[in-house]
Length: 142
Length: 142
Length: 142
Image 1 (cartoon, rainbow over the protein chains, first blue to last red):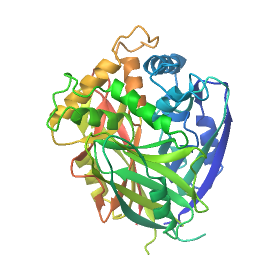
Image 2 (tube, one colour):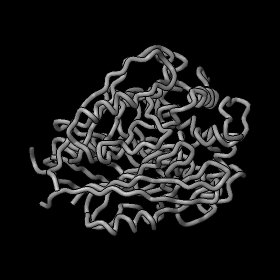
Image 3 (cartoon, rainbow over the protein chains, first blue to last red):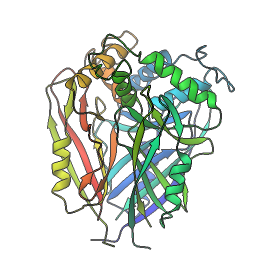
Image 4 (cartoon, one colour):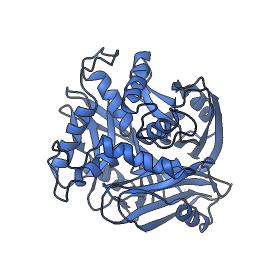
């Protein structure tokens, strides 16, 4: 048995506006730079108009279809919404974030995140304009 | 390196029925009363007709708009639903809970939860009537 | 204070196609077989067309109603979707997974998961055909 330890970090990610962005390699890189081989990784996005998802990483159509589904489900500029300070995509971005994830926990086993073969980690940007986003990372284990 | 330790607790929260209730200060207070400064906080709501959310904490319109969106998406009294034991808001409450979160994990770094500037922690009550809800808390770290 | 330790495992679950499957007893059995009594359990499903949920475990109508809701919200064979490699339920399965959970964290306190009285843990299969699914388990604690 080894003594447990933990590690904190932050990914700073610049994007080009609405859509899914694969961040698996950035996350795997950060985990690999730690000396912890077994434990629990937590990702926490520090925003309410972008979110996190584990999704299919093979066919890019999946990401495009997912975005089309959300665009139809949560209409930009919907008159239902009173909160429009930052434009027609402002409140829909908060709703999309509520329907997806602010945080993800992924076990780490023998140096590998337990992602399935076709699973990738994505940042889902919900605003139209390019954004700089921060994802806090925490790893606990041995 | 310090020895890891952990702490369990429960928040008991009385509300006035359907809507979002900020619980950030209760959560921060519980975390602050522990001697753990770095670690992982988990919140787990022990109900299936209320849920947890991280959402925008600045403009109250966001919370009202979110509720309006869910009320339109998951109609109370929808004849689609067979489960109506406790009224027209019974099954919609379970669906809303499925679409949001039962649990949240938030890293704690140097005594601070890594919440972004505009992020608050909310209990989202889905039943019409006032409820008493329990949120289990767990903190592991050093 | 006891030394922290951790445990990894995998549940292999065969199902009969689309619907909710209770996995509480399998999860509780795995946790009970460990020597950890206080800690944090994480479940992570290694697929993007099935997901995890905590839901009502009393009235089977709840599970049937939930499925009816999702079937209406995310139409199989919707012409909106370009990704149809594996049939009309392929892309809807990914969308349903995005709207529910890939992972769950549940605190363990004195040998008991902190589930509420009416809460059960479910694997939600989104494909029509029977599937074999893997859920990675991780427990950290003392």
